[in-house]
Length: 172
Length: 140
Image (cartoon, rainbow over all chains, first blue to last red; front, side, top):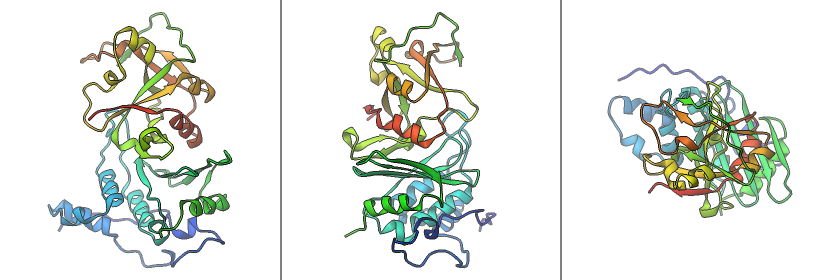
């Protein structure tokens, strides 16, 4: 079996990062033993020709798998490939209970610099979380009813993120 | 790709800059016409600093070309976003005519090529540009 080098990411997008006081949160990834994710397992198996696990992934995970396969210059110009540690961090985030419990599912978009944008757009709010290759994570939030815009590093302005998540709603 | 140094074409704020949008950069938004729009990621400069490219609609019309021609030769899923030049001005971007010449495979829209120069790093800026730029054509 192919032995891929596997390094824990320098930072993690966890529910703790996103769910401040006042927003219900289930058990988080904090402190848990680090283990290869389903996505990583599926990528390893794909390396040796087994596609079954890839095909079982849900749409967001399939998109993440697609992003993981982008090579340098994927835009036909100078776009950078996405570091596996970012893929891993985003995967763990989007499969977390806090995210899968939302009634609106995010779109995952590659940036030219090798990062990933996690985007939710509704009538009420726009929320874009960016996992950048520098190791920084940031967000942009817009309340479409008031016109209020916030752009901050993750961990700051938690009330705005909590508000956005409430607007994005819980599945019925 | 070379840009011509010919006399600059005056660009009206009422004009539109048409930008190619790849399938990976199309996101869902119920506020957008048809429920889809371009991500903010689609409105950035190249990583080598080359400014964002687009094609000026008024020049295309003068060449008897349409929105669809911007993505001529592209695969299914590609789209064209129509960016109001006024929006770019409002977001502190300068639109400069930069006709493409000298490429191995000329594209019919090359004479209408423009460079959009300015700081694009705030996601808020790129998202505002995106919200103002409907997708006007999809390659089926």
